[in-house]
Length: 399
Image 1 (cartoon, rainbow, N blue to C red):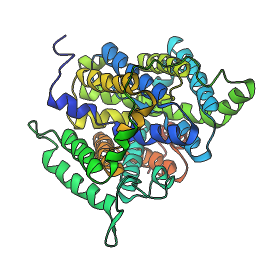
Image 2: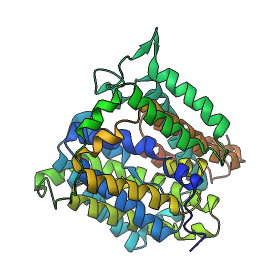
Image 3: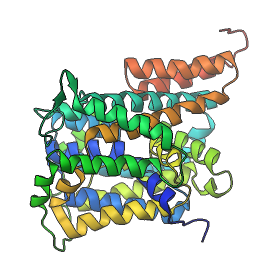
Image 4: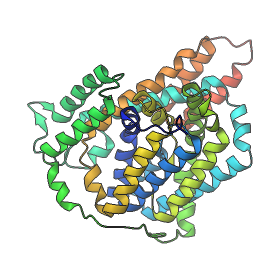
């Protein structure tokens, strides 16, 4: 028990590692698609806590990126997001409980997994840089990159870029510092900057109390909602979830925790995400997964045990229960460049898993996955990588 749950500065620092993905996409679906902050943060908090208690090692929680990106870009309704979450929950439970995921994993070559990790890492770095420069899709939804800042630029240079570069340099100096853990300093500094630069007015919107999430707050989706969600959100999400949140995550967890990470199996990850999304559907939360990028970030910033899950899980559960919908005003105080710094370092850590690739064919396969992902999406890169990796098993093919 002592080894599974530690509560110290490093675990606190690591617990903040995947906020760079969680907050921009979560807040985007709250503002654009009408999800209730109470349901979103309540479901996130429970998912953190229960996944930590079961797996016994640090475990990430992130929005399902294909669903979230499509929802924010097109403005689909909250009911349609809920429909996609329920559908993917049923599919993941079926794949996990029947053992189908074990079979799928057996036919996916290692270079494809490395390609998924490399692609996810590069995408995280790109999105992180976008958050620092004020050019991310999330920030373009507003008239200014940081709506609460009293000014946006320092001369011709965006203020967010200056903040991002400064905090990135600070992170480089503190990344392995146990007395001043990097993520605590970065997020703490960002929170203070948010207050100083005008975000304090948002604290006036906080409404402390005791709140309980409603059941099916948007109503039960209709047949047309399920049909729409299946085609445009759920099916495109499945390959990315299996490649990144199941295979790449399980592989990375075993690298980080050769002994204690054995419970992080393909089957367990599918069932964990299936149950979490079933619960999230009923309380009005968002579709969630265990992204490999979040694990890389949590580990790089110091998380080594499930204590990090309990720390951040209790935080999200507390702000949901005691602040309700007004919790959005609190988490919005963290400037986007701060989240961008976390994403850049998470992406770099994840991309470096490529270093154990030794043959030309394997390296080409991983890079091909990256190239197709950038040109199209991760699902397409994942499928193309599988095909090419199996072709390369024919010895007459050279590269």
